[in-house]
Amino acid sequence: MGIVDNLHNVFALDQDFLRTSLAQFLQEQGLLPETALGADVRRALAAPCKLLSSTPAAIAPQQIPAGIWALIPLHIARYCNPGTNPQLLSCIALCSECFLCALDLLDDIEDDDSNALRLQLGDARLLNVATILLSLASQSLLSAIRYDLPYKRLHYLQSVLHQQWQRAALGQHHDLLAEQQAMEEIKPEECLGITEDKSGSLVSLACSLATISVDAPPIISGLFASAGSLVGIAHQLDNDINDLSTLLNPESPAIDYAYKSDLVRSKKTLPIVLANERIAHYQQLAALQCGCVPQLSSHAQAYDEALKASLAVAFYYRSQAALIIQQIETAYSRPLSPELRFLLSLGGLPPQGVSDNAYTQ
Image (cartoon, rainbow, N blue to C red; front, side, top):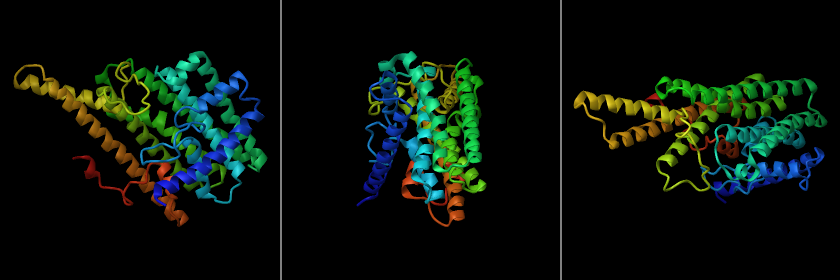
């Protein structure tokens, strides 16, 4: 049996467990499938890559398994404390899944991104579903008390949830405000700062929920949170790169690609800002050399260089995350499971990272 088959089997078992836990939880909250709100909540949780979706468990290195936001804290908690009550872990996992699903719905409306669920429900119902999902995230944490989670630890978990919630909202607000700024006013460093707040904070949250819930040592919680932040930034950069690539090549979009409005809304993603800097550079060269307007080929070259540079930055962040993971593995004297490395998108990185020179080519 190959690595892919092993991943598929492990994730399939986890997904079955979490889906059963979710069904019971929703029923306890009165969100039955035959009710209008219960049906809409399930539709949101069945969107691509969400826990109730039909996304394959894991079929390729770039395939995101269904329920990844629940699987990440589940596997981190298991790694830190394998003997933890599975029902307690399910409470933490479902908190993460519901919370991130809610933010995804809000993000779709704020960024005016089109997808099947938004078209089906409309913005009013989508906002109400996001509201109930945020409530479910908190309620899932509270339900962990039934499985011997100490009240002091519950309070800590709730504090971390709200702190990272506010940080993600701050990053999203900066992102929205940046749309009103001229492109040349935004620097790459500012783009990365926004990405760290609005995206890095969310993976960091999923990691922190896991480590705190099983009472991992503070140093381990801090290391996982830092690694999660770096992975979250890299994930967002991957999305921004894919969005720009698809917009530049609309004839061959990715399967199930949801339309993104980055260029239309003047989003200040790293690849777009870098491309703008490169275009300005070629314009200066053209003016100095012959006083003419640069050809379209130079624009294509600018976008290509920006995409390659953004890929290098994403790889750098993942490499830094891998180095932090090595510290965790040393502390526990055991490696992360292949499943957890896959979930954190660290499976293909070299064990010792790479030198900074790799990003200056």
